[in-house]
Amino acid sequence: MSEKRRPNVLFIMSDDHAAHAMSCYGSRINETPNIDRIAKEGMRFDNCFCTNSICSPSRAAILTGKYNHLNGVKSIDDSFDGSQQTFAKILQAEGYQTAIVGKWHLGHGGPADPTGFDYWTVVPGQGEYHDPIFIEMGERRRYAGYVTDLTADLCIDWLEKRDRERPFLLMCHHKAPHRPWEPPEKYAKLYEDIEIPEPPTLDDDYATRAQAAVEATMRIDRDFVDEVDLKGSPPPGLTSAEAKRWRYQRYIKDYLRCVASIDENVGRMLDYLDAEGLTDDTIVVYTSDQGFFLGDHGWYDKRFMYEESLRMPFVVRYPRVIAPGVATEAMALNVDVPVTFLDFAGAAIPDDMQGRSLRPIFGGATPADWRTSMYYRYWMHLDEHHNVYSHYGIRTHRYKLIYYYAEALGTSGSIEERRPPEWELFDLEKDPYELNNVYADPAYAHRVASLKSELRSLQLAVLDEPVDEIG
Image (cartoon, rainbow, N blue to C red; front, side):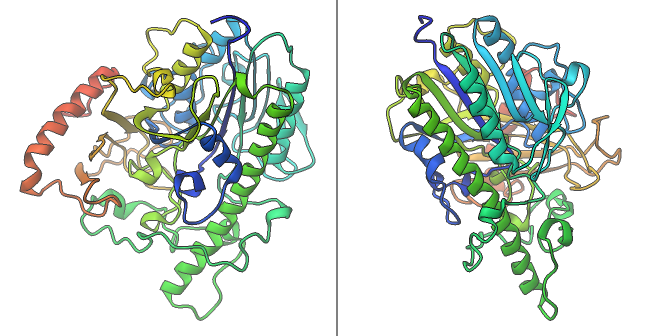
């Protein structure tokens, strides 16, 4: 690929933006016209999954193309070792201008600071929504304004100053819509007089499922810190069911108000590319580091291997390769992202990257040997706030098998307190909301055996090890 045609890369990633809060994915609860524009002018991936549904580990997987047991970031309490190889370093060495702006969440100081970037300015930790601090090339600076607007401002400012003779990689990483949800003033009253539809599983009772689902402390009706998360408490006199619905409405509206600001600023970035004549030569991706429970199963947050948490939104536009308005069922993973960018840049792809380039799928030709199953592992166990069991599993196009091994195994941020191991199996064709665990159903005995065998194969293929015998 010639220097002139090596594509620019604009990689826009939000934090905790679930696919089912995007109208291009058929959302029942909001509209995202600017994000939808990427899908309408490009491709929507309907089966894009993270390999560990929590912020820092997913970000590390995207940077390195490796699962977390190899890149060293198994939990949100692990810092990233910036001495290791990343796709940004490789692109930088290949002559790309590289920058990251916004959310980093992989540690700060020394080897944890961003590396492989000509320019970086990132919020410390989770960052602040209003008048945030950014750490710019090691120096702290506070800005007046709203973090989502400021992130886009800083991205556009960097693009204005770039060398127009060289391709660029710009990672525009929004803090929003991470908890606690604090929308900008301009969207503070959005949806105020509208009742947002409730998810079908809001009143899930976890009747057939593992104890892990029962013990998780992510319930809308019980585990919010009302004054922090909801900026208030339910009015007196409500029944418990009414109070739950009040909390859901309060939660989801602020979440969606934060999403509205993201969508607006995605539009600003797309308009800039148009105005600068960069649209045809730029791969634009919009994604999130993982999914999120929007009242699904009665929860907020993520971590579980259930669909709403596992699934990443992933829409991409590159007019030179991708036909407009295309959707694909091909299974994509977060570890595929860096391999794909390197492929388009004409750079050598390191042998130890564990993803696979999505380039042929962008062109409309899914390879015959493309993956039909994926491996997931959530390492944290009984952390202080969410109480989710450690687990791993396999998802195929129809089935999902989850093993809660329920041990900390020394993972940072975990509590060293074992729980009895348990299995869950879901037939996603018959049970898309994952309400009916059929692991013990004799009719699925053969399926369980074959999935366990495939799980072992996937685990070994990515150089991970089982906690105990899969039998």
